[in-house]
Length: 295
Image (cartoon, rainbow, N blue to C red):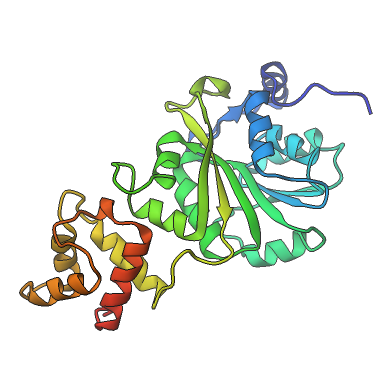
């Protein structure tokens, strides 16, 4: 097989787009990466080898898919835009261990998908350049469905990556931070300037790796109630934890019961939610649950 120019070079990306008469759909958040160095960092962060599988979401014209195919034992790519299928078929023709599926990842039964695609591999990682407008729904679906994943390595909006990996005490730390960190261990891999895409987005991006946890970092009486308490605690960031919880769980009551339960959970009423570690939220939600607040 003759060595072909990589899809990710600016020249070949433009040539493919022009030859197929492809036009970008803003509604699908299509921005194609044209930087081989960044692609290398993404693939390296996924820790793939020939025994492992990779799931790509939104392969575009196959720049990242091509790199994954050169590393992983099996690659499955889910593409929502039917216009890209013939391009992907052409680009990925040298790689028989790559399968492109037309579909919407948010509507697919991913457990069935994993069984059909990855039965012969030792582990699977998601590796993708995600459209900004559906980043959080896609990542939370991947995490909440408890799929057999090793890593999730994705390029997303820099601001969202910073929120997902934030520690308590800063403005970036919030309910999204806690949700992501409950299911995984996030690590920022690198930042990505908007200039390395065609077309260029309006904001910078970042690559983040979520190492999926085998067991949660905290023990909970009720997982759904835990996330309800977290959401309520951040409802109005400038309010104290006491005021936010009173609005959600103690409306119409005086503060005596709330303050008693906060004392039992060893949390000062005047603290703000952004100062609480995940372990403190776990203790708080367990205390409120056992007190019968899970209405």
